[in-house]
Length: 331
Ligand code: PMV
Image 1 (spheres, helix red, strand yellow):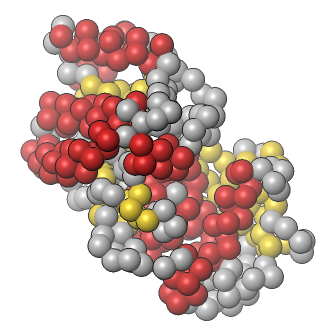
Image 2: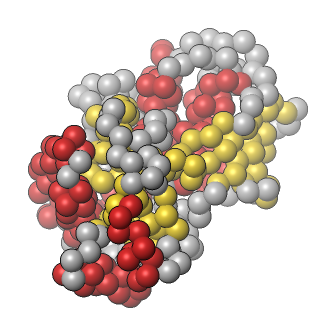
């Protein structure tokens, strides 16, 4: 099934669109990663994943109808060229919502308080915030679950950014993907801390869509990934319900390194790491050997996200003085 057919059937008819308020959605960091699509048209994943949303770090977006031939897309106060990849992705996503009002053109104003496309998942918060703004503009009154399904069509991981705290993306089994969306996990974990080690904030050269395709098509090692991910997901659920930080950190770190192993085993090889990424990993391993409960995870980029608890904060800051720390559940 293609996305146009799905949307035609599924999305309700609304009135003429109006200007929306500004809507926020948080970025999220996966502890069990999504890597590989079973359907690239609908962004349906090979494996279920689990993330934590980053509280106030994310994207704010508002939309308004304009009298023009094309959408106008503004990112952090700068007008984006209509042919740019960013503007094209935004317009492609709006197409889903304007299916019953195809003449509508919108001005989109979006602000990120995280670096764009540096492996800090701004596309996740971006599509989630845009889905919320479009839901209001087109008066669709969709549920968070429905918005999660729509956000997934923009960027897979965006389906987890419709919810706060821990979120599982259940992969679903249906061909139309209507059972593949984020589901919030009740448990909270005050003091859980995520520290962003910014190795390089430039846009990565191979985006996650291309990276997933290459890995799935060329890395034999990828065959073991679904089993790794499903085992890790079960252990992460256990870690969260028992508040077992050692289990949470070790599963998240091994999961991220396993994903990167499949990328490295692709052809041509896909290595998102830079020398400073490896130096930071080795520092984490050394500190852990010295007794500090510190772990990391990484997405499709060179930056590390450190995982620790509040009582290790001072020690972690001593070794990573420029760390930006997020506490998704407060202190
Ligand atoms: O949602 P995408 O297409 O940007 O893919 C995200 C992939 C990872 O960030 C590497 C993993 C994840 O689950 O967020």
